[in-house]
Length: 243
Figure 1 (cartoon, rainbow, N blue to C red):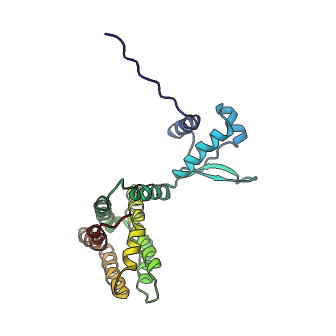
Figure 2: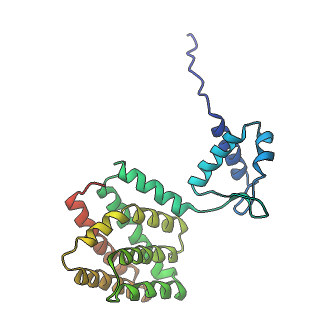
């Protein structure tokens, strides 16, 4: 039987640089906080142009594993970091806007993630985490809070609870999913006929959720947060607005 040959995929130079850096991360040779050598030193070692190296570094910065500090001095250059929330949030927002995921997809993902977060938070959250969440709830209940600030505080409350659950991945995913629909939720809040009543109803849920988490009633908190999410977010699904 004759051999069937397939074309060999040609990698662009910056992709080879990415592979080289990834391999060192996987091997444990590069860790969060480590600095990469200056471009003028690293490019010739890798056998690539400085433009190809810069392109690879920009990709790493976009996905949240590297930060580049321009200029001179001890803080200049590229440093390995861990910033998955911002990168994943940007990625999800773009794919949601492009139609890769539907509102129904995002709704169901939020429900699954936040049920898990609130149930785990009831077991693992420390007093400091819950005090921080309570401060957000208090601010949301003040009469002078405007819609954009309320939306920001609402997001921070849900992410704060997710972080207190003890599961970093759940926290990151919760933050990314909530951020992906932030503009739509903001639009829905701005369209509310009676904003003070809407804010009061939403924050009453937050108050009850916080009470249940403090009391260790995780199963009940999971049920309440699902109802809470399916309320406003469910309305967005029913209306099927464009992203």
